[in-house]
Amino acid sequence: QVQLVESGGGLVQAGGSLKLSCQASGSDFSIASQHWYRQAPGKAREDGDLVAGITTDGSTDYLDSVKGKFTMSRDSAKNALYLQMDNLKPEDSAVYYCKWWLQMTSSTLTRPYWGQGTQVTVSS
Image (cartoon, rainbow, N blue to C red):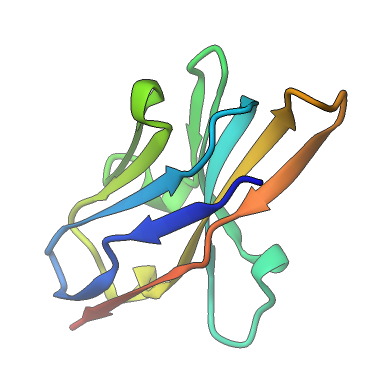
């Protein structure tokens, strides 16, 4: 069983920075892709914006509104994913979720795993 545990959210003033972490427990899996989503109030988690994504070959992509502000990185040895968020604005406020597509070693299927979410609030 794999769990994704997030940390790093909080309250910050506009222009400030936060770094989110997403740590996976377990090791009997291979990673197909890793992503960060954000859920605005009133929206379902699955309808949130895809903020950033990275594939196994290291290719990254970002939501247009966060390009140049957010940087995704990972530490494969630690099974950890990060999102450095700089120059934060009030419109970046949301619950941020990590989502990994994983294939368990005992399965041929790839399925999504979600973190528990972490609140980011940016005050003006």
